[in-house]
Each structure stands twice: as C-alpha cells, then as structure tokens.
Length: 505
Image 1 (spheres, rainbow, N blue to C red):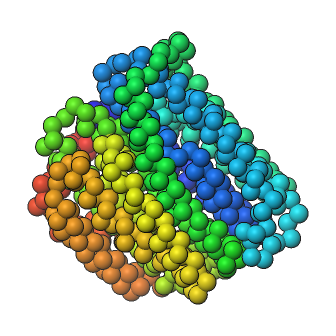
Image 2 (image 1 turned 90 degrees about the horizontal axis):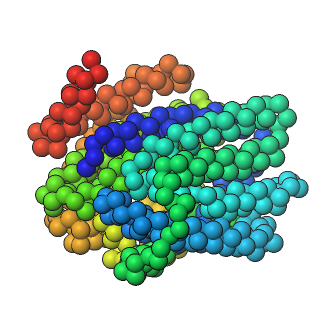
Image 3 (image 1 turned 30 degrees about the horizontal axis):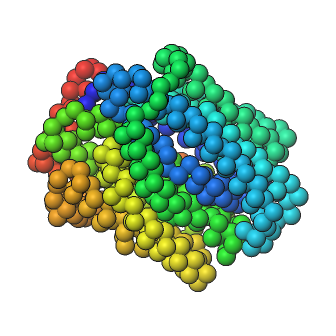
C-alpha cells in the first residue's frame, strides 16, 4: 500500500468532514428556528424519493472504478481513457433517465404523504430536488478517476470549499428572508459548483483524457458489464433498505415523524460520513494492494483495519448511546427528542451497519460484486415487509427494528462468507469470534459510560455535554486497550501512533 497517499487522503478527508458537518449542523439549527417541522419532513421525504430514483445509477461506479485499479497501477493510459469514455456516456445517460423518472413520479407526490401540509409550493420544491440529483451525473463521473488513483484528497478539498460557501449562504438567507426557496436553490447551485470544480481538476491532473480514446478491450468491458449486472441487485437492495425509511414514515406515520427522525439520522449520517472518509481514503489503496501484494499482506491489513473499524464503532456507538438525547436537546430543544428505547434501537442499528464497513470495502476492492448478487434481494424483501408491518403498529421504532432484522438475517453473515471464500481465504469462524469479542467490549464500555454519566452529570448544559463526551471516549479507549493490548494488530497500531507523535514532536 502507498502509505503517503493514504495519509494525505485520510488527513484531508477528516478536515473535509469537520468543516462540512459543522456547517450542516449549524444550518439545521437555523433551519428549525426559522421554518416549521413540516419543511424538515419534506427534506427527508424528497431525499429518500430521489435516492430511490438514483437506482438508475445501478452500481455502475464501483464496477468501473474497480476496472481502473490495474491500468492506473501499471500506467496504461490508453485503457484509462477508454474506460473514462465509457463512464462519461453511461453517466450522462443516467442523469437523463433520473430526470425523466422523477418527472413521472411528480403527479403522485401526494400519495407519499399521510397528512399533506399547507405548503403550496411543495411540488416545485420537489422539482429542484430532482434537478439537484439529475444534473450532478453530468460531471461527477470524473471524480471517480481521482478516487481510483488514490487522490481522494483533491475531491475533499473542492467539496469542502463548495459546501462551506453554500452552508454560509443558506444560514444568511434563512435568517434574513426565512425562505425555504433560498435553501433549496442554494443547494442546487452548490451541487453544480462542487461537481464542475472537481471535474476541472480531474482534467488538469489527466490531460491525456482530452485525447481520442480507443476501443475498450472486450475482456475489460465484459468484466464491467458482469460486475454492473451484479451491482444492479446490490443497488436496488441498498436503496430499499436505506432509502425507504422516510417514505414509509411519511406514508404511515406523518411528516412530523419524518422531521424528528431526520434529525437523529442527520447525526447518524455525520457518523457514517466520518467512517466513509476513512474508508474512501484507503479503498483505492486496498484495491491496488489486491493487485500487487501477497495474500499474507492482504490478510494482515484486513485484521488491522477490522480492529480499527470495531474500535471506531465502539467509540461512536457508546457516545451516541449516552449522549444522543443530551445533544439533540442542546442543539434543537426538548420538543425534538425521541424516547430512550427508540434511541437505543437507532444506536444498535448504526453499530451493525458500521461493523460491516471493513468487509464491504474489501469486497469492493476484490471486485466480488457478482458473488453476492442474491443477498440484496432477500435483504430488501425482509426489510420492506418488517419495516411496513412494524411501522403501522409501532411507528418510528418499527422502521428502525425492520432494518436491524434485515441486517441480521442477511448481511451479518453473507457478506463475510463471500469475502473469505472468494477473496481473502480467512476462516468465517475466526471472524465471528472477533466480532463477539468486539461487541462484548462495546457493551461493557456502554454500560460503564452510561452509569458514570448518570452519576456524575445531572443537568443538561454544554459543559456537562463536553465532559460527558470526554468521559465516553476515555472509558472506551481505556477498556479497549486493557482488553486488546496484547493483540498483534493493536501492537502495530500503537507503534504507528507512537511514531506519529514522535515525528510531530
């Protein structure tokens, strides 16, 4: 693996993460103080609908990015040009299809809302959301070349700049004119600005893309088509699992529930974005490693990243379990709180999803799209049936539990089975033993932190909140070091951290 590129990618990924998410939370805080909760519901509902329409993308990006790892590693510019030409044609077609499909949904918008609010421009807001999703595909294909070539940091820099400008302007306009129109128009302009600037950077980094591209090798094209077919199913399954919750809530519970739910999942989204920055920064390097390194090196890297992922999952899950409602109360107010059982279910769902990330990253890096093509079908059916049934009877908590049930029934065991059988040749039993140890450690950390916080801090204020977060991080870190300090992977991580500290000093 190219450690320097990984370091640069991770550094800029987290800078981007801090800037973008800090602004998102500031914008949301101003949003709820200037507009009604129904507008939050609209935001969540339209985001989910457009995510479903993005099925038109059909998982093309992962399949094509995977096909670029080898030609980039060996400097085969002709193949890269041919692949990017294919990418361009496919993504422009996708953008047009999404816009067309979105217009077909337009007449039926009211059927997604249980109690339609008195917002006359609701249908026009949807058209802006639709345009925001569709036009991004006209430029965004070029960012994937930077990502495949381990230059994610360029994407992060331009993304942070564009979203900073948009976030500041949204806050200003919401405070001055209190208009949802200004919010959505700026969202659209920000998407265009971000994608155009990243596309221009890609053109400068790879000037040979301006040259005429030859015919793509049939074997590479066949591999892309085969992987894309598999990703179609994965994409549909993922959309059903992760992009229907707000639609189900809007239909069976109401827009107010969507508004409350979207606040909690904005926090969850920020945590997942935190994970994504880490994994995006190293995925291309893992892909490169799967081409050039030995099987032993691949397996060793997997165990190190597996431990890091489990520790991250523990840190974030413990923090959410203890501090979720105190944060929402400080951020938005008591009127936006869920009960403790609903919060617990949201955190459990988050933990199971986060713990999949190492396996999913390696599956993508190994190009194992075809092998797990039936898993998303079962996952999506179980999720949809369970979520709708439970939402009708139990509301928000039912939707969350539907996701947990589908994850445990499918992803929990199918994904590692496929990776270890067809990719890394590791034992599934050892993976689940480690999973059980990591989960047990996380439960211990959660109980200790919850009891300690309840004993030490009674009143909810910013000082106690910060102290509570420090408490959760300290408890989790100490317990993990005590339990896993003798593992080879932990020893390696400790050595790397020590060397970084010495170098910084």
